[in-house]
Image 1: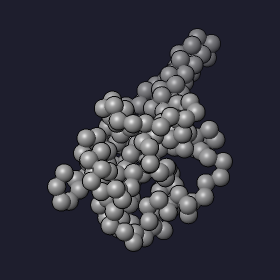
Image 2: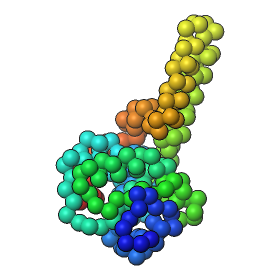
Image 3: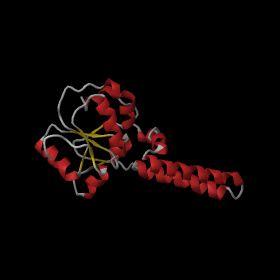
Length: 189
């Protein structure tokens, strides 16, 4: 990598950045449950929902590079937009997220077994479609539940957003009991 940071960085370049610039901040924007299950050693968890709610409170008094991490890169890209608007410098997104990090054999700290958000969405969507199809044998209008979920998944793919993931991230097992927002945000400032 050269002088300025790109908007995205692959695993090899991220590892080199951390090696060559030890003050690099690795910020994981996944849910606390996902972070607890597997994360990059030395990274800090600042969930995307916390950033959405509090990004205007951030002030950067550093010029350290910041690498944003999520499951695939989508949530990290959203976080990059929020943090850039708040004036934080040197922001980049890890291409492919923690999945790419693991595939490249980079070190990962593992904890209790929470499911990744993508897997939670597949379970919820699949269960609702199955319930709609099976239930339509008794109540024919339930077939529209399967259609609604299918339309939502189509919109999710076209817009590169996921409303179901946002809703699931609010469930208790995807959150820490009490988040000390100033402490979480301190990892960025």
